[in-house]
Image (tube, rainbow, N blue to C red; front, side):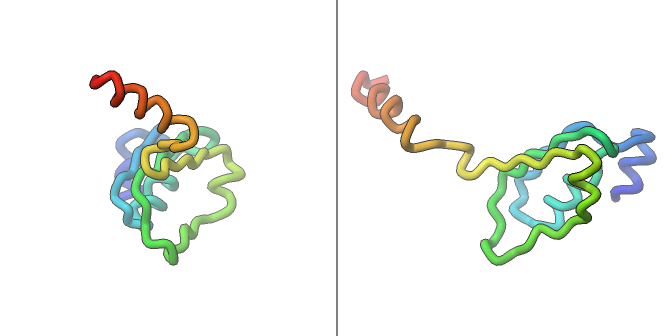
Length: 90
């Protein structure tokens, strides 16, 4: 599949989002970028014992890996706002 994306685009993709919780799909999303740029956002949370194995060169070549744990919700800063909205019956 990686070769298909490279053939379709001639260089790879610029951005990808993976919501599968499957580590092989997460690794594929990260590895399908053109060297030098690209950002992948991992949204799913795989099993805690699963390892994300990729070549170190994927990081050194400028690719960016970002994650979102529970939608990046931060209870310490977000919860007071949620309580205010609830209290106003919005």
